[in-house]
Length: 130
Image (cartoon, rainbow, N blue to C red):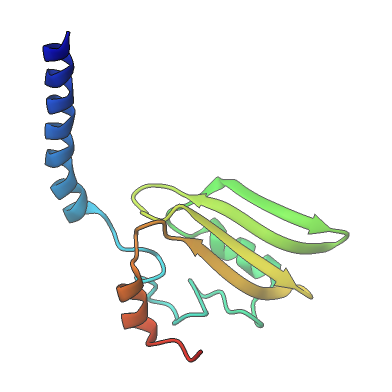
């Protein structure tokens, strides 16, 4: 029994070791790092303080990797408070959220969960001011 368990474990480790280099070669960069449209805090043409909820909805509807079936809109009265969604493969990021105040984007968060590291982000944005 112990021999069989060891064989299964060795097989799983071997497959994992084989797939990791393939993933490293084929994985796309985080959408935070690969956005050709604008620099943070703007993302994908969505600019805090300038982009409306209707514009965000339209942009997300045509954005590759946004799993539009998971898009959730949080509303209070007639105001959109938040959009949230999941990314789909091949995008390595997990989730996205856009928050609104007064009908305009207030903040954008992207759940990178390992698809971008601190060094990459600081290299792109520079050191924090505070």
